[in-house]
Image 1: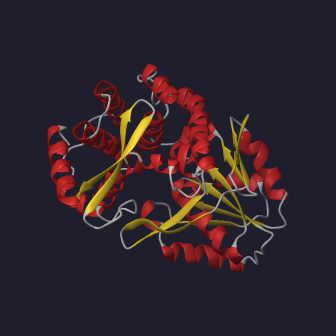
Image 2: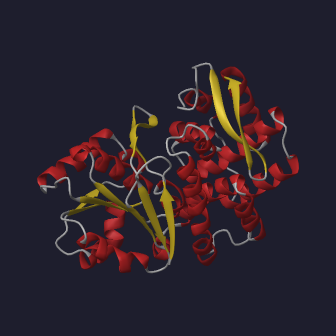
Length: 355
């Protein structure tokens, strides 16, 4: 087992990520018993796969299963969770255990932040994406009116349990989804990029993924420790995400991580057009993203996506679009483009890339 410790600058607040095979069965019962009250939030998919295990490891602990799917990351679902916590008589000394993928982790973390003005939270990410990204760093949110993550709070979990045991039940699309954030980390971390490039024919191998997950968690933890509130360095973790979120909102045909891979390709191409960069490296990064995607997507709605990019929270005004673009191995830059130019170039890049 590896322990990755987050010590947030200027705050009396820490968070530990425990990584490794068997960490869930070993640590989950102990953590549940350590709180005066516990409440397990999961979703319908995870309950179907792991409901019996949850009951065996945490008997007599209430389990609330929200409907699975990104479309349920809504304020109405959040209110349903809070009502269930009230019904169970949860108090401020209790803990919410979020057992699931990124949606469960995001909405569960927000429920913990809001309930009685804040109770403890333990994250148990069950997807590759959630383990390497969303469960680490304390970002919690729900969507509202087709705007992603617009209602939320920063709420660090006390502990994250990242067990690769869960990967065995993930469908291929969920593996690709996690690879989106792993490739993004590779664009920001030279060591991770080299590992991915050397193993580019093993990107979906579960043993390789189990080995590289802690490195990805450590990279994100290092960034969060330096910039919890995303005022500087943490903006690097938005690489590829302006275009990814825009396409995700208007198309809704692929997973978040798949859109991050597409966004990484698009924003690498924007870097080549507008920034001083290492073109050879960016070509390899794009090749890596395409390998992770498993093929070239077709028919992306570029013009419609550009409109959604206008709503991105990184933008300063309505007539500009800001992207976090890769420029060299381990390096990135913030690129601000007039909306009309971003729309034109997004259409051109999608056309020339065969999207």
